[in-house]
Length: 565
Image (cartoon, rainbow, N blue to C red; front, top):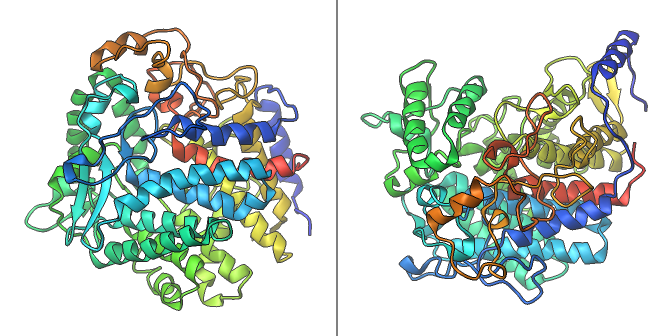
């Protein structure tokens, strides 16, 4: 079936094309981009580096992680341009790497499939360590983020506290435990054929982790805890998106080198917005957590604004996929409404899992005829239709040049995750010879792929700046990214330690970073499609693991299907 467009839609689309800036357009080397997107993870490694480490300017780091609890917590990834291991986004990174392999691994060259599994194992090994003391204890973070963000030093030189943050039962940690469940479950599927023993270990630990997440329901840290009085806990308004532009404008006011001041200002901001101003909404199953040593060191870095319920459903959905167990099917079916997953959601990322949850579960309907889950498929289709500019109804925002846009920083995290969902949903439809119905429009799967390709090509250089937002890809790419290890001289070139404040001269330098973090996708341009190659503008110039992880799957598809258009 073909995409049906009405004449006025064609005229409108033509006018938009005329108004957009001229951009370069050529055939991209998706295979090269795929290789580099995977290589990036070697630059984010923590722990003992292997002999086959390809990012050779990196060295061992974080070797004492976990010693304060007599536990080995070495390994894993630094989330972005800092030296902290935040388990919440790292678990999401792991889930997306695994999902990339599950959906598109068969399209990868054997060498890149191997590299993808190596990158996946690096994080899944760490997550296994973080849940090794269940059922009573889960580790959720390593590294004091306030001290770390007040320094600019190589991970190899870290002299800031390597605090290991732990949640002991019955205190809750549902969002990080739920996402860790998803990560271990998805990884167990990815390793099922190549390493069945390891796959079984991952799955067994996923089951234990979900039991902890569901038994002690609640957030391990949320902004609402600052508003708790006499056991009554408030959470941010349902439509937090209204306030996000003001929030990100606020945090931009204060430069990174004054991070301690910014941290306290953020607490005042949250209290002002969420505690003193309506509208309020009571948090579902809100538990008054006693994780006092954790909450101030997770927020404002990775506050779970969306609540923990989506992670419970997300973890259960992955356990259902990994085990086929009916208990998890019943869980996601019966808890969709109570957990608030029935709301239409047009995003997907480390915080909000509902968009990905709907797409993941919809496969059970499309290919498994599980019509009791039809509501998930309907929500997935609503999300997909919101991405189609020609469709009626609510739409996501795009920049003038066509990049998916949401208020706040790090725009490319939305482009990579949503492009991934577009390709996955298109694949589900194609295998069942189905199309997407958006009102009066019938959208074939290839149209969803074209939407994803447009985002990919924008990232790789087809944009008004003529700039590849992947470091090391193409002739022009960001040279001054917000990344400590990349911006400071390597151990080989500067064997002496560079202490906390000694790195400021490199942070403030206008020179390109001495170490090229190949494959890193930076935060990206603003809503005006403009990008300044400025190390201090972390919203635009900082790469993250959760931008790259879904991009691995996306690039694997286009490397195997370069002619898709």
